[in-house]
Length: 183
Image (cartoon, rainbow, N blue to C red; front, side, top):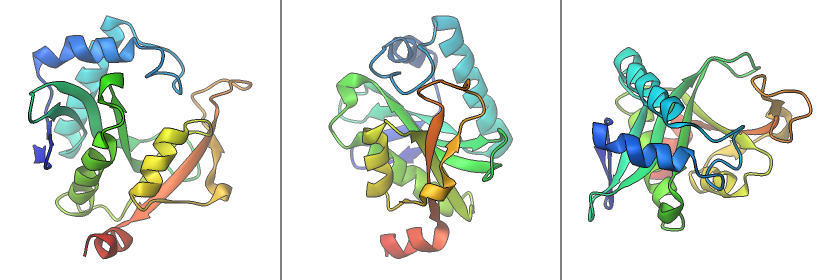
């Protein structure tokens, strides 16, 4: 469990499943992903996330607003193994309910995730990626101090040729840079 001034990043609970399914069914939240998810797909995703915690000791934490106890979405660390010039890699990522947008929660929770990545998890580098059109997520990546080399941009192999979502930008951050920013 990780804690920030306003947020709790914790393992998943049964009561998170319904609001997570609602988040994953929201076309605006899922705008930069291939499709919305059904309840079964959303529940299966939570099972895979929990499996990642068991395998790696970290994962995509459920994000709870401390003041209200309300589920806001997820943020955390995910191992990416698809075939690309930078994989395998650990990615910092987030997905928040629309009502949680605009409060700085993604940056706050991702900061806690990166503290964990470069602290307890002992990682040397973390990446983040998104579609070229997801400007909100790219802004979070820059706020975190991540940098982009356009030469690292790539076509996501899980998306079909011709898909407007296929082209992705890649941001990187190493432990030394993170520690320097946090000092």
